[in-house]
Amino acid sequence: MATRGTGHSPANVTKHLKGIDFPAEKQDLLKHAQHMKAEKVVLDEIQKMEEKEYGSMADVMKAFGKEGSEESSSKSGRSKQQSGGQAGQGKSHSRSSHH
Image (tube, rainbow, N blue to C red):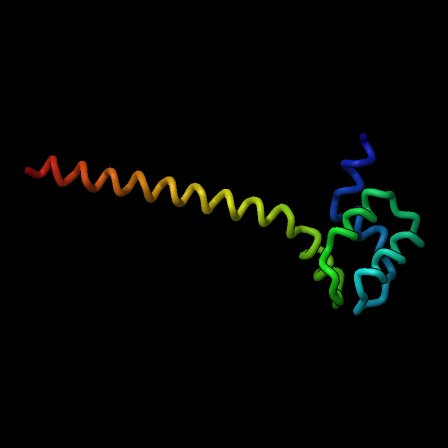
């Protein structure tokens, strides 16, 4: 299980894609990582990425980080809804105290 943690890191992905020529398709990234003897977890991460042409390592890193960013944005959306509901309750309460 220790290798899973290292395989999932962006640094490990970039290490196994070192020297690849950009632009590169997702399949090119996979082939290069296999050639560099990447662990299965690294290959799995690349396979999860969008089918498109990547212009640079920065593009690859953006695609690599998409899964986590979608989760955090949905969480922040929920907290905004909760605070909005509380603010509405507070306003109705403040009106009654003015009377």
